[in-house]
Image (cartoon, rainbow, N blue to C red; front, side):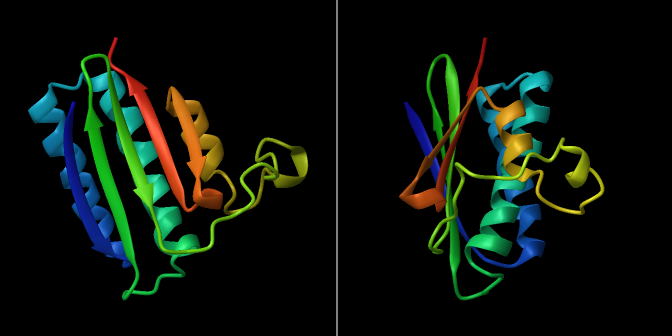
Amino acid sequence: MKSIKISIPSLIENITIVESFIDNAKEKFQINDDIYGNIMISVTECVNNAIIHGNNSNKNSLVKLELLFFDNQIKFIVEDEGNGFDYQHLNDPTALENLEKAGGRGVFIMRHLSDEVEFDKEGSKITLTFYMN
């Protein structure tokens, strides 16, 4: 297993750092384009939620991002300094009454583009797993 970690202040413009982190991982671990797209969308959405909702865009709060690379899978662990959220009782963004709402799709997207999504620390730590084969 190989591991790479970064921490970023909770500023939305730091999403570009996360994108570069993922681009570097793509090159280093030879991630194919199909998985790469799912990783980019899922991880940036997860970090975006950690910045905005977890840390309330407080630039003094950090979001930690860790990549764990195994032979057959890659995991991204995103952790904020917030109190978490009720991830078991989220509104269905595909329900008719939610279709026109601006937000509320992040976890739905992560669950559909990742092979596994695990919530820890009441939702302030999320692990996104992607299988390489």
